[in-house]
Length: 254
Image (cartoon, rainbow, N blue to C red; front, side, top):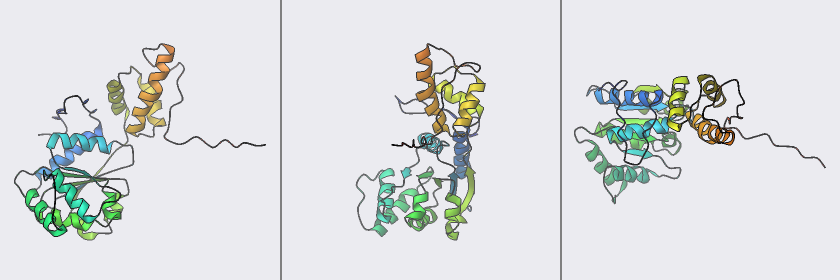
């Protein structure tokens, strides 16, 4: 499969297909790279970027496409929680045993032929909660592909652990949305809007897909409905778009 040209939108019934933004395509490219790697290559990939760039949506899409386990690391997880949740995603509904026993079980399951990549969301917390070495052990011994998804600072955090950092064979930085991405998001929201206004929204949203969607659904739609507009064009009145920042405090005197 060419991940950049042959992405089909297989999604569960009742759920809208995600917009095929550039970060979704980039994630699928990373998945394909991990699948095509040589048996002698290391098996970690990293998808990282600023909050709101659409990493989670891209990860969900890849999870649906591949069927690979998807973990979102919790704030309070222990080492045992990490392995137990991984086992659950691998089909073990009631994981039990010591940490070492569960780790061996996870390694055995992940060592099966044609194992799809494992997606680790909120991977920054692996470092912060000192879980990264446990993950490295499972990855090393199983040889399954793992894709770490996290914030812009994730590569720098991983650099502190040379035996993990050196095993990453590809770093894929998430990108801010461009005008083409914004067109797709507007179409998905069912809004007719011209490119000049979309560019205003893109800049107000600082290139963050999440904020673009909020501006389209929570700002544009009510604004257009209140005025009976079927299309939003430049040259006319525009709403005040949100930028994700709280309003300044109003100082009161007296």
